[in-house]
Length: 300
Image (cartoon, rainbow, N blue to C red; front, side):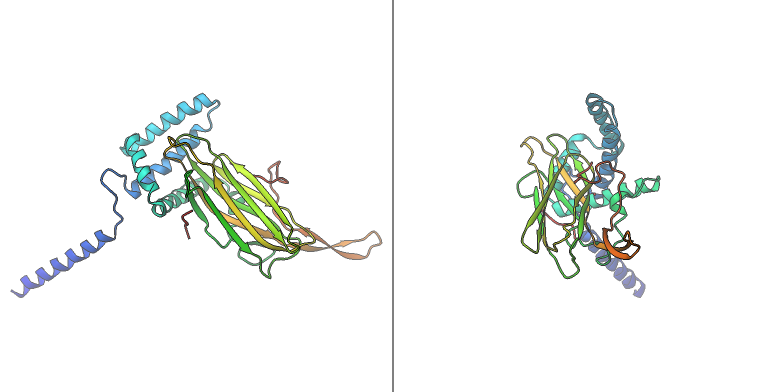
């Protein structure tokens, strides 16, 4: 009798635990691809798009892209219509989709590094703190999910300078852009406005039209200290028929380079102090230009 009561209590306890676990799992409507499966499909989706982008002509690129994507859908046992309808659902769940996409980007980056790819210009700054002559001073969202529709296609940030800013500081804004467009024009604008102590304003902008590394360089103003930095990102709207487009931005950084004093000798042999900007050099032929090239999450 006691054993029967004990077994009944165990079964009841187990049932409560299972119900609690199932209640904690994120659920999706019937017919919508689960978050885990969506993550797997999106990883292969981006690999397929990347492979197709290496085609020699636009015609061959479009053909290869179609063939590769159909292979991805077949591999995961879904149709393109099921994938598209699931995307429509996740577009209405921005925070959940941003989390999925964050995992996708991390997996793609980890896979690239595992086969010998360089961490690139963004990766070299990941370990910098808020202090030092070279510092990542970005203090806002490090990942954004944007869609080309009103309410989701623009975001702005504002940073007030503190006592760690100095005259002659130079800056470099970095991020990774990940386009997922079925149709329509890819075009994002990055705009930065630097307000100096004398209230003069320096503006810098560039366009991004492909997936890849984004780098926008802000040269130093030797005689002024920065007072405020405004950053604005705008994704051009799509046509009403262009359903299923998104831009995921990851690893947002703002790197500040202090002017670094160095010792030089004058022609008469006396030592004197000069200044140079401590910054990394790039192999990019446009390294002296503003470049926009081509992954807490925040709702735009």
